[in-house]
Image (cartoon, rainbow, N blue to C red):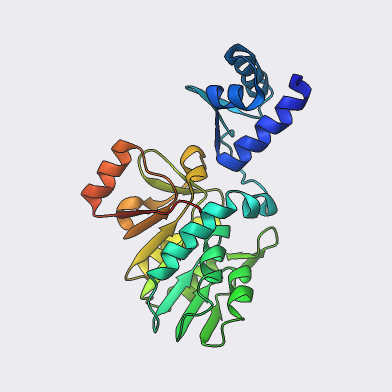
Length: 255
């Protein structure tokens, strides 16, 4: 297979997995390590990947990847994470679900919960939960982000400040090695910070692809999260920090 055919598939694997390795790609394509290193160097030079030790990751940037692409990325992992998270969501509570495909997966797993009051700034979450007749749904209002159905800005944050939630389930665009939750939209960051302030307990849902991504705006630290639901173990340094912070890490691998 020529590099003309390998490059698009390498990029697809990187989008799906969050990272590619030299050894893994060499086995996948049946070529030498040197050939894959040249492929990754070419893709890095064109700005489509960033080289890291042993492989490459999607490039850091100031814009998020498209919504439909995010929805299909690691969908099995998101389902496993969502089921584990929803299993820990009690009935008879007030709950906030924010913007993101992972929180939408959680909403899908809440269709048989009873007596929930769900507040959301995610139009997709509201539409999913319409199928649960025992769920009261409140939408925050705010500036509609057409790309993903998110509601952001001062109106959304102001609505959130009128509540005190029993639990919030939130996502993020990236998670750096220090345990900071990151996002691309500064307006969404302000809304997310308001959610954390107004919640008695907070769950984070994020698959492993967020470990190798970067975004410019900081939301908060994992130290402010009660339980982090993901699909792969954290790096040892970050896992130790979570233990110090009393942040529980729940790992659910896709079936």
